[in-house]
Image 1 (cartoon, one colour):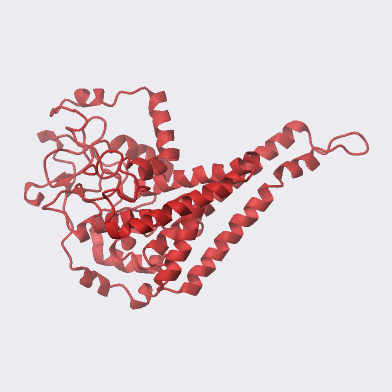
Image 2 (cartoon, rainbow, N blue to C red; image 1 turned 30 degrees about the vertical axis):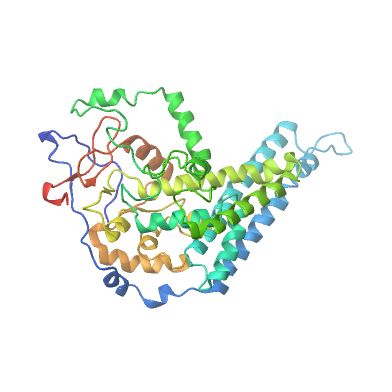
Length: 415
């Protein structure tokens, strides 16, 4: 059975914490050896099949938007008076039904938007189609329609896949170190806790801001991104250090796509655009943050520094999660359910992810990590137990608000 990841034992650096499990880094298996255990047909990409999923998502999005545009009209009919003078439904019932219908639309449309965003992400990996032209055309159109700079994200995301789990070279969700937070080296948990003693209201406000604004802030200013980049590095800037000179034209086209979509949206009445597009779009931003955080952030998942990092170890530093159950598999194309295999072989299309994962899981054994704990519970737990890493060491585990860790590394495994 793969290890579970929630509610682990916690310890500090004191001798009494010997009962905290010892982490053994995965072997540096040759990638070709791992590839052999996955059936060849799992690597086959079908343009027709991918387009079928795209058409399905577009139909769901359009259908949901059409129905939502008539919610007010349906509410008016529901509250209309009969010839006898009595209303079909009372005003309180009508208001409640209206709120329920809008909430249902925002939930479903945010999931559908996320699914289409994930299809564009597939395009960036050429997992959507063997044709680079088809992949880029579809990806550019979808991501632009969802206010995401396609080539900018594609390039930065490829860096993430090249250096996943690396403290020095990964692209996002780079943890703070003890010294960066100004926390002194101490075993006194109360001293560490003082650095995370913000009020509950402030913590809630910060968490909500991160959920709904962090993704675009990352694109605009590199928030939570690689710290070796200059302050304010933007994915919208074709001259940013994350891009090569040869990539500048693609970045400009990405910007044009986003600007064009913003212009189109500006032509609509805000009373229609806000409930029909912008609220689900903020839902999409929330899901992207939620997904990427939980895929690579957990008390039992390591970060590596140069000397211990390898591509295979970084790929294994991923958690497959039962993300929203059937909804995650249907609307989000299983992007969280089989993310580990995606990091080993990003060109495997999502519809082959389930089968490929079963073979990879058998090969990885205890080094494969899976969680079926409810995601909202997990996010809250991980948010409070993944605050910083140490300045020293090459295999690192995130510590909680009191400086405690969930895994310890044997001295001979620190390189």
